[in-house]
Amino acid sequence: MPVLWGISVVSEITDYFDGFAARKLNLTSDFGKLLDPFADTLTQITFFLCFIIDGTFPGGIFPVILFLMVVYREFAIMFLRNLMAKKGIVMGARMGGKVKTVAYIISAAIALLTSSFERLEILKSILPYIKIGALIAFTISVIISIVSFFDYLTVYKKTADAKAQ
Image (tube, rainbow, N blue to C red; front, side, top):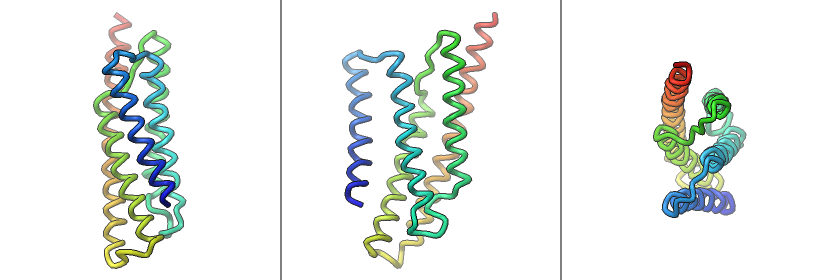
């Protein structure tokens, strides 16, 4: 469990500083605008999948249906980015996508905390409430991700309409 906590913390810290340094040193690129959200998504989906199959609770910590909504949203965003790229436009992360990422991080941290408490057999009396908190946080993050998808879709539609004129 400590290794997973370490990987999670190091992953998020290095991602933050990578983006901060790229903007501060003016080293942003079209490639980076696409690779960074893609790498974030792979990391987050991997963590979520672990919480789906986590054996500490029947059925895992997160429901499969919510996980699938996340996966489908992320594939749809990649599809939109590909369509934009074919038009010569790079669509990097938008504010809604960044908020979604923070919500994903929070829900993953609560789920990791839930799993840690279960495995360490501490706070057993409030563990069901922590699990509910993880589920609520994950549900909120899924809602945010869906809302942000419609923002990306709107940008794509405006861009497509502008190109058509």
